[in-house]
Image 1: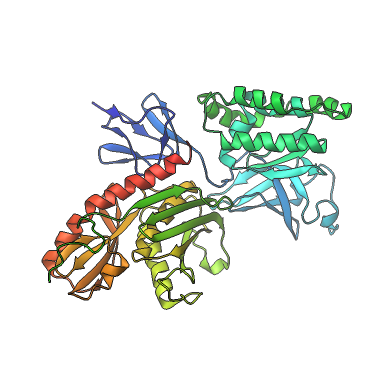
Image 2: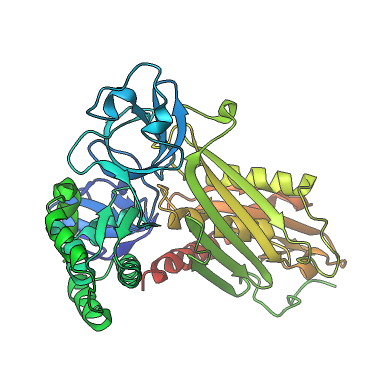
Length: 260
Length: 232
């Protein structure tokens, strides 16, 4: 009879024996060696019936299809742009995916996206060799002006967004900042300078404590303690309109649900 | 004069005091610290990231690069000349081959993972400390690896089989000394590094390699604990 040696939601490390016997099945972050199932990544163990997998706690962003990410233009190509997406691989934004408008042949591409511009875009294709195609066509995809960009570990992004975007909208409501979270761990924040600082501190706190239980409550009390009044009503209004954009995190939401 | 008692009073199969930590270098993607006695090693992992020049890329899997470096002030009084040397290049290479059997970079074709090992203080056993620190750092970076690689030296001092020689023992003049750094994958007991400096008989080598298994497994537990303690 198989035996589970580690509790659900415990931290496992490479080489650690999670379960004995053939009653369990290895999934992502775990593998079978003879009769045992061992971890091959640092992560939180998640037991789903017979299936044992781990939720990663660290690691670089690996591009995957339909992810909304924040990128930086690093090169202008013959007919497109090369985008740094905070990953081991760069994305290519082809001309036809850049805009709904017609771009004339031979046009100066830097007029649309210049070097060092930051953009919110979506990954439309990833090949087996991790060549990445990028698009700017879609709701909410745009060039970023102003604000600030911070980088967090991509594995913490689901926690920062929260269930159905609950965590990020809580921060938005309290600080009045506009926030866009990219799946690649880059986060764009714009608001009153003092509020931006609070937002950054809150996100850093979430990042540090992402593996803990009851995080939403803790962040709520943290925000209550640190919040200051929003001076500019404009920001408040705009954030309300910006809200419904969180559907991209469905996959990750399912993962983080168990952690609550 | 037989070697009945170790110079620092340890038991023959006892390692020096060990300390391990994960996540000691904030800017790195993963990092580890490993100290055994007076030998301490820091390891920082960067990547997976793009690899240039392109000719070094491997379309089948990611590439692992290791760099071992002793700091100029790390030796016993003598200044270590900075920069790569024949010795440090060799150790970088054996560190890479010791780690490669556990590391799986097939998710990252054409990319590279860089491991930098720096030693601020050394008192023999530095490559083993480096390998231990590097496997903590790689695991901390979220890289897929089937186990942590663990390493310690064994050998003989005047016909006596011992574990984890320090510098005084390596320089012992009363008889033959052999220093054998060993790296092992604890879950499978496969050896990924085996080098030797000195002379040893076949019987003693077998005995030493048998004796080193227990301490290696203990070190693996310390490494795993260090990784878990980061999230406490």
